[in-house]
Image 1 (cartoon, rainbow, N blue to C red):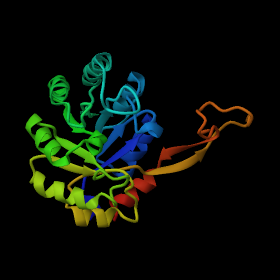
Image 2: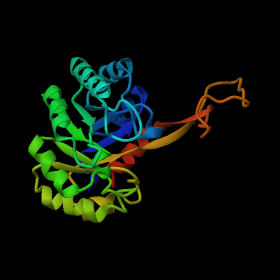
Image 3: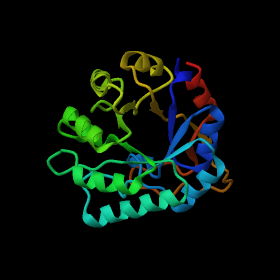
Length: 246
């Protein structure tokens, strides 16, 4: 069943994108810093990814972690990054902006959409933090957004499946509702069947060991969360392939 549903793989590197393409994905979302939900990747990483894959390339435009209520300086940075994505041959950009009251920041979102065209536009999981998902749905349709990435305003898609199913029905093909967050090989088929979604957003990770022979275990480069120095998550082509065979 999933072989007929376009699969977008969320990932952090050019190598991951190559693996996703090899596994049969139709599209990738390139991010940096997924530990914070994703921030804008470097220009070099975007360029190398575009050079090495022929499938769809989406790039997240998010200047920092945290909330989605941005300052004018942050908005200017987002505009710059969108312009740059266009020059690098990116197919689509992914962003989300909210006002302090929890509603869609309609005007700023429109500004970014106008800059982004003719690239496609995804409104990301800022949607899951908005006050009224049904009002937000209609506003994003009015703005001409191509798709909404959502977990149904819950920690995972499976928990938010009732809302996602309702959004798919209310969208009525006016916008794509794309479930994402917590979709696994075990639950993906059920989510697709119940929701009626036409696209899915997944991660397909495996761990790989560092190539370092010398290892200093007394020091680490991350925050107090102590992210591992000598192994990391990468996209697995075989995991992507398994999703497509469900």
